[in-house]
Image (tube, rainbow, N blue to C red; front, side, top):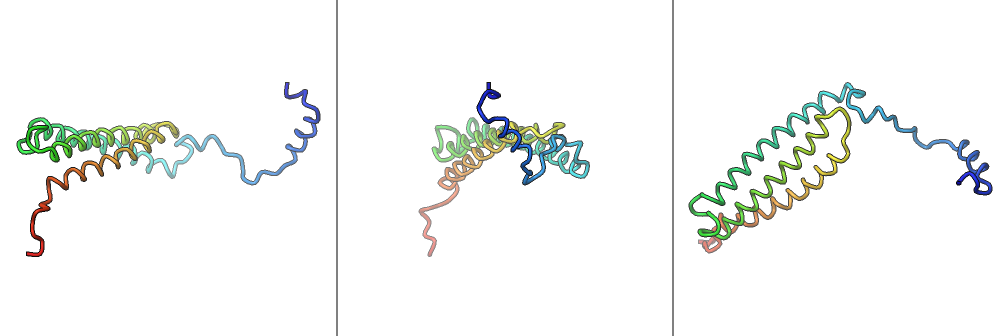
Amino acid sequence: EWEQIPGIDQVVEHAKTLELKQPLRNLNDLFYESQPEELPWIRTECVIDVVQGAAYLGQAVVFLYKAIKYDGIRCPDNSPAGCAASIAGFITSVTWIASYLSFAANACGAAVNSGALCIGDWTALMANFGEMATVGAAVKEDCDFNKDWLA
């Protein structure tokens, strides 16, 4: 149908004469094997992302334990601020796990995975907000605001 547009032949011919401002992208660039000098770094990132995900899994378990069983900050009985820090820490840790595993899905694969990178970016952003919530709650529990700092 577009071929029937009046004057389209001249537009196509003109388009063929235009010079590219930058070269066309080579689709091989999306595959890590096409970049042998970068491959060791990409594989290192893969290992680090997996290890970080595992570390945050351990941290999530610790925060969950603190929220359920740890005397002094157990939810909701002992300390509302300690409970909030534990719950926020657990949720933040799970969000970091999602982020690092998304980045690992990209770095451990054979080609760039833009979907995994996008999810990794968004979950990292969410985890950073979670870090602020965790430390914001922990300040109330950890700092003595009634102390006379000048004495």
